[in-house]
Image (cartoon, rainbow, N blue to C red):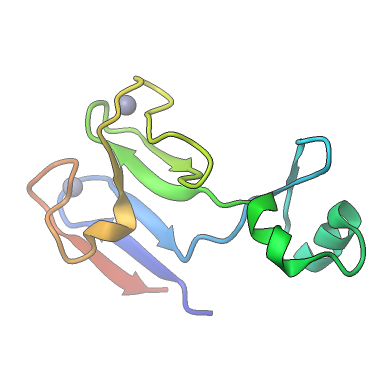
Length: 118
Ligand SMILES: [Zn+2]
Ligand SMILES: [Zn+2]
C-alpha cells in the first residue's frame, strides 16, 4: 500500500493517506479501536466469524483528515456518519484535505497542497 503525505507549501496543514478504518462499531454501538496489523482478528471478535462483508461498511468508522477554515484546526471526521462541523469552534466551513492536492490550500489561501510518497 502506498502511503502519501499531503502538505501545504505555506502553512502547517498536513494529512497522511489513505485513510484506513479507525474503529468498528459493535452490536451495542460501542466504538472498538482497530489495530494494524491484526484488524481481521478484531473484526471477527466484534462481528463474529464469517461476518457479512456487506454489512461491514456500515460498521466501520474512518476518520478522514479535514481542516476547519475558521479556527485552522485539523481533525478527523467520519464523513459518512458525522455532520461536517468543527469539533472546536462549531464552524461548518470544513475542508477535506485530500480534495485539495495540487490546489490552493483552503486554510491559508497562499500555499498549494503538495503530495509526497512516503
Ligand atoms: Zn496552507
Ligand atoms: Zn473550527
